[in-house]
Structures are given as C-alpha cells and as structure tokens.
Length: 124
Picture 1 (cartoon, rainbow, N blue to C red):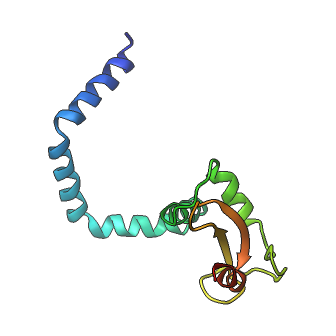
Picture 2: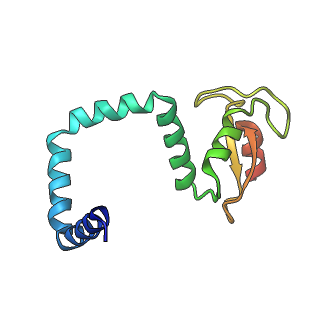
C-alpha cells in the first residue's frame, strides 16, 4: 500500500472518530473569523467562478435536475433572447426581461431560458 493511500485511510478514520470535535472547531473558527471569512466570500462572489457557483447552487436549491451543470450554466449565460417571446434578456435581478431558468416544479427538469414575464405566465 502506498503512503498516500495509508494517509487517506488514516484521515478518514480520524474524521469518523473525531467528527464532533472537528465540527466544534470549525464552528469556533467560523465565529472567531466571521468578518474575514465574509470579506473573502464577497470577493469570491465577484469573480466569474463565484457567480457561476452561486447560480448553480441556487438552481440546486430550486430542485432543478441536471446531469451537466457546467453545460447548463454556459447555455444559460450565453442565451440573450427569451426562448418564448424573443425579447432581449438583461442581466440583473429586476425587470420583466431579466433572464430566468425555467424548469418544471414537479420533475425539476430544465425547460427553457425565458424572460421573467414569460416565466410568470408559464407557471399559471
């Protein structure tokens, strides 16, 4: 057995044995370094990777089902026309023509990239 494999097995056993202690230490560290960690997170969110991560996590929370998150994200960010009415889509959180990922709320399956207005009409 290689040293890396031995270390991996040892680390796994250590984590299992000390799970409670590790959680307490993480919680304590987070509390003591909250401001610094917050600043670091804000900077990350301003990067392309951060925006991508935030968007994909939001879709996962909405229970969107996907096999290839990278491909879906690329499709989403490169879609500039509503696939229902053809209006030009805008960036941001406000406006009837903001870009929205339309999905079935029952199955979680992605359907289209729509403007906010068409997405509201589709849900009715």
